[in-house]
Image 1 (cartoon, rainbow, N blue to C red):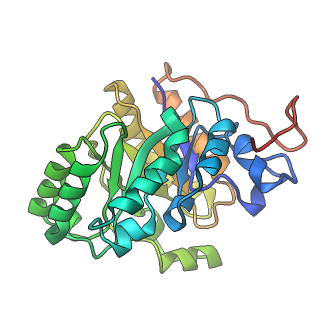
Image 2: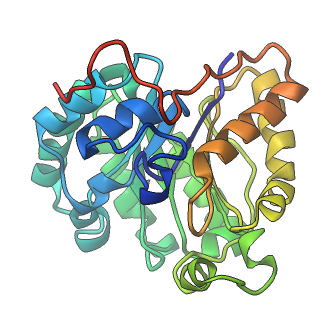
Image 3: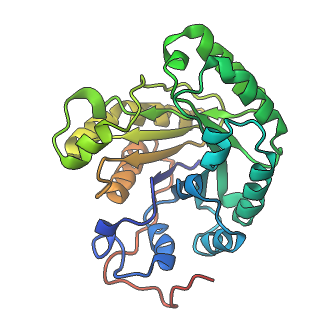
Length: 288
């Protein structure tokens, strides 16, 4: 039984000297982050396919139990809209192959304009994917949340590939007006969709966006503590990513979420003690 928790990134300017030993060069921050959390969103791959050597360095900096959820590149999902992108997909899969078992799922995040009429493209795309990976799809078109038929059709498409539906829960964030610059910026960018808690597979993935105020973030995730605890009791292996608009305290919040779930499910193993400021490994941190 294991719960993976993590953040939207493994490096953040405000973490250096607070949570992570610092200053650390960019190529050494993932190793330090991995002592705090046991998963991370691979958002950087959305903007550029990494080199194979880069993926090898990510694997070298994390233990076999660490998990990446890597996002398919934007040209595949947003520009080609899953059609005619086989060569781009092949290059991406070759690049991330060194992650091996650390690659928890390939994350297909679709644009808000990708609606029910596009489900044929999604079904065809998923059928072409190799069986050696697990897949997770995030949709943002409101019809999938407001129309039961569209929701059911999407679930059928995902079930045909044993793919998970990734919810991005922003309900706590949009419950009241923003109060900081980071919140005001996120207010214009994040999707407004209802909370969805139905898991389709044994490996559900949740993305949760709180507020910059810790108490409001914690209050907003209470339903997820209940849901994730129940998933664990059912034998599922969930992964939860904790976001806030500024992400300044995200590593400690992710660990707090894990602790709250563990208080409900005592058989869940605790996270290891993290490496903090002023601590150093016995051996120098290196990229390769």
